[in-house]
Length: 79
Image (cartoon, rainbow, N blue to C red; front, side):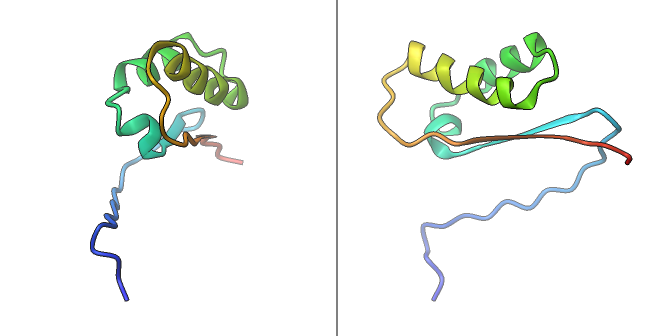
């Protein structure tokens, strides 16, 4: 059976070589932390592991971290 509280979001978009795609759990996205994610992306050296760490650490530093937090960052590659 389907959980009525579960929401699925399917979006299609074009990516180019080198683009970084970031997915966040509601522990981050639910707090409307778009500006922190955007800021971390803009300051990123391109290291996806470090980007994830920075996003989580900035939310912990600047908010009441009361939920689990998961971030996945993927770099698109034509290889």
